[in-house]
Length: 197
Image 1: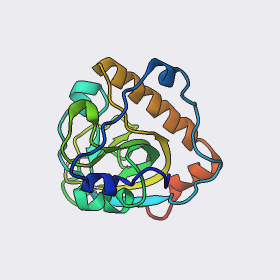
Image 2 (image 1 turned 120 degrees about the horizontal axis):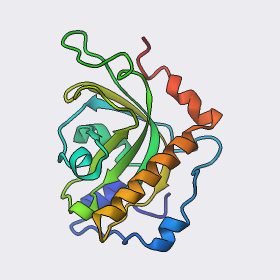
Image 3 (image 1 turned 180 degrees about the horizontal axis):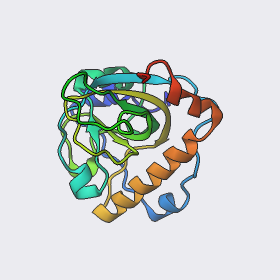
């Protein structure tokens, strides 16, 4: 990963390099599992913070709702990784009072995370948009979220159509689930970083 500038270095540039466009050959040659058998440096990377309101596009526009962490929460990952799509586990913590989440909602679930500018939407600031692979029964803005990032799926890409972006997101989710279904990754779902019930 060291050959490509980190997300933080890229964010500091006056003009960011344009993301390459997704191609049909890229889509057809994507691996079903990514990363070594055991997470390697800089992983695992642990992130936490209250869930922020994002652009509201994930669920409405792409059928893939995302939770955003505050800018300061992503500095640790942006300083050691490049932009792209990552996988790991996430947990939304219940509130002591006013908790609207079910017992299943507050469990640790697989996640896929986009770190970057989402070139298709021409974002102006670096974000970490986390898609937790679970059907939540209520919104959880303001709830504390914990994330353990375990590996890299692919680089950040631009798209000529929304449908091509959606196709890649669906592949990202499958790759994340398959990649996490290995013993040395799966064990992080019970890491002491997450809250136990």
